[in-house]
Image 1 (tube, rainbow over the protein chains, first blue to last red):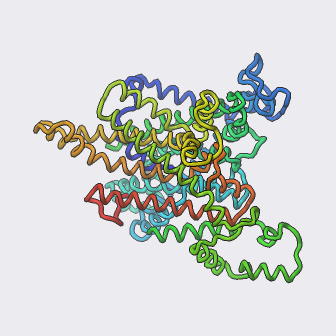
Image 2: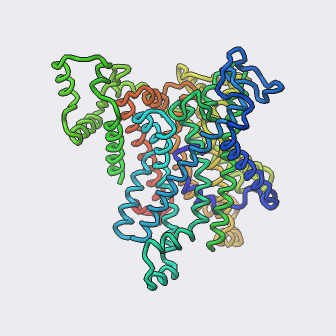
Image 3: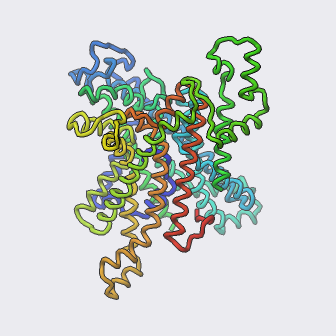
Length: 293
Length: 305
C-alpha cells in the first residue's frame, strides 16, 4: 500500500467487500486493538520526549548494536543510542507529518469538490481536468522533486505529498458533493434565500462529514508510509533527529551483521500504526456508506 | 488528454527546477568565479538570459530529441546516464508486475472461489501485508532470505541474465508485496460479488457446468475491477521502485534520482522525473485501453469516473 496511492479506487471497491474477519468484527476486537494502537502512538507523539527513559540523541559508540538489557528494553542502535527512547521521541515527527498531509489535502480537496459540485459546468470541468493532470504525478515522485528543489526536509515533502493526494480526495468527495447538492433540502434552502457559502458550510459539508472522516483516516496510513519512505531515502526528516523512517535507514547496516532489532522495531511501529488506521478507516467507510443507504 | 498531461507535467518539472534557489552559473562553474568572457559563453550556451518560456522551450525540444542536458556532478550526458540504468528499473518493475498478476490474482481467485481455510487465511494475511511498506518488506526479506537462509544476494545487480534475475528476486518481492495483497483482496471480493449475482445463479440453475460458469459469467465481469486495481498498483510501482532500489543498492533510475536530488543535480532530476511521469501516464493509458477490450460498454475517451 506504499505509494502512487490508489486510495479512491481501493475505497470504492473495498467498501463493497464483505467484512474483514466476521468473528472478530462481531466482537469488535480488531477495532479495539486498532484504536488502542492509534491512542498509544498519539500519546507517544505528544508525550514521547517526557516518556523517553534516555536521551534519544546521545551516541555512545562503545554500546553500538548491544542487545536488550535490563534498563534498555530494545537495546542500542548503530550509534549506541537507546532504541526505545528514539522510538518514543520519533513518534512525534512520524505522526505529525502524516497529520499535516491529511489536513492540508483534505481541506483543499473537499473545498475543490464542493466548489465543483456547487458551480458545476465550466468550474467543474476546469477543476476536474486540473485534477486529472495532477494524477500524472505519483506522490513519492512529486516529493522527491520538491526536496530536490527546496532542499531535503519534512516540510517540502509534506507539502508535495498533500498536493499529490489532493486529487484522490477531491475525486471521491466530488461525487458525494454532487449527490448531496441534488438533495431536495438544498433547493429548499436556496428558495429560502440562504447564501451559497452558508448552505455549503452549514449543511453540505457537515452532511459529508462521515465520508470525509473515513477518507482522512485511510489517507493517514498512506501518508505515513510515503513520508517514512521519503525519510528512509534521506530526503525527509534529517538525522540525527529521531523518526521511524530515518531509524530504518540508519540501522539497515545492522541486518547483514546480525543486529536486526533496531531497524525491525521501527518497521513494526510503522506497520502497526498503518494497519490500525486501515482497519479503522475501512470501518468508518462502511458506516458512512450504510448511513447513506 | 495524454499529451496535455505530459505537457503540463513537463512544465511543472521545468518550472520547479527553474525556481530552485541557487545560481546555475555557480552550479556549472562549481562555485569558482569566472572571467566575464566565459560567463557570456556559458550564458549563451545554456540560454540563461533567455526569457522563462524560451528556456522551457529549449529544454523541452532538446528533451524530445533525447538530449536532457549534462549532469553537473558526473559531467556526462543525462541521457547516457539514464540509458545505462533504465533496464534495472524496467526489469524490477516488470518482475514485480508479473508477481502481482500471477500470485495476486491467483490467490484472490483461489480464495474467492473456494470458501474455507484458504479463504480465511488469505483475508488475514493480505490485510496485514497490504500495510507493509516496500522498505520494511526489504529489510525483512534481506534478513530472512539473504542473511539467515542465504538463498538470495542482499545487494547489487549481478552479471548475466540468470544472475540478474536472482539479484532482482528479493527487490521485486519487496516492491510487489503490498500491491500483491491489495490485488488479491480486490480479486477475491469481486469474484465473490459476481458469484452472488442473479444472472450467475440463474445460469447455475439452468445447469451450466461450473467451469464454464466461472469463466463466462463470473470472471468476465470480475475482470473489470481487477484490471482497475492491478493497473493502478502496477503504475504506482514506477515511483516506489526508487525506495526498493535504494534499499537493495541497485543501480537503477529511482536510486539515481534520489542521489541526484540529494546532490541537487537538477538536470538529472528533471530528466528522470520526466521519464517516470511519462511511463506512469503511459501505463495508465494502456489500462484504459484494456477496459475497452474487456468491457464493450466502455468507449475510449469516456472512462467513467
